[in-house]
Image 1 (cartoon, rainbow, N blue to C red):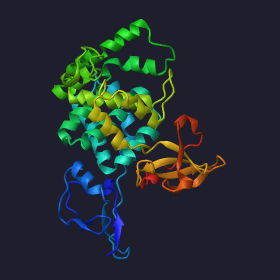
Image 2: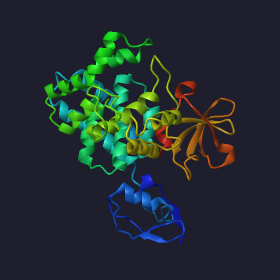
Image 3: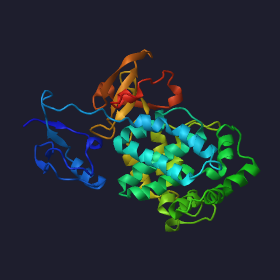
Image 4: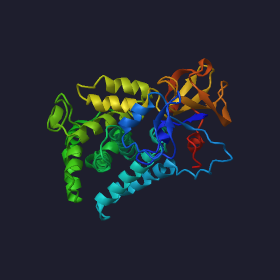
Length: 371
């Protein structure tokens, strides 16, 4: 029997298997019809690889077109811009925020790696809009990995989207302000968590997990945070997870007062805070979900090409990438798939997006989507 490999993100989690599942040695792991419901169980199965019987293309039924997570995510900045801009005018703020959270959940259900990539290569929009969406995506991926229920994750994502609702004007000013915070700005910054809760309550948000997470997302395990200097387990788990995603996404995003950090340098920065200011399990899980070289980050290969990481590979340091700039610095029309496990395509350097002058204009196609 000839087998073909399937990636973990292709696995029909929570649905009956359409065929038998084998490891790389041909040993039967699960029979057709069995169901795997948790990411933890899937991880255990992945240790020896996941394989299914190979079908002849002539016999295989045509695959339905895949819904694109890029279509779902690309629409969100406009939706969030309106959500914040008209929050005091349009009714049902809670319901509209939950709709954004559900869209993020749907996109992550389709393709985890494409959603991670979107954080790095999504449309350029105002920081005040992009940052909460990026943070919510990472919160969804980590919480799913940790086994949180869909309902629990909706409260989490809603809080991540609204964490800075108490300082929207200030946050926009700071994102384009090159000089340090002024004293009045610092006072406003320290007050934005409690102000955010007040805004949400005025908008008739009553979900305690949502409100507590907004109130506590700047608290730190060692009681060095604000506004109440809470410590350890006194901080809600939603707030602890948002803190990790908030810090990481801020580090990898350029602002007027500092350049963006490369993806793996930002990992080192949050890892240094694990167990001190940031939750260890949540920090470790974020790094595990995203990988050493996260999808969407730009890399320079041993042969001089510049590529974008698309998928995790056979080892943490050998992802699958697509080259879009040749060794002479020229854009190419057809992106070449490269396996970094081969020496000539080994990753030599991770690049900051702003340093890459060629526009990546075939984003969805890299992950197998039309748009």
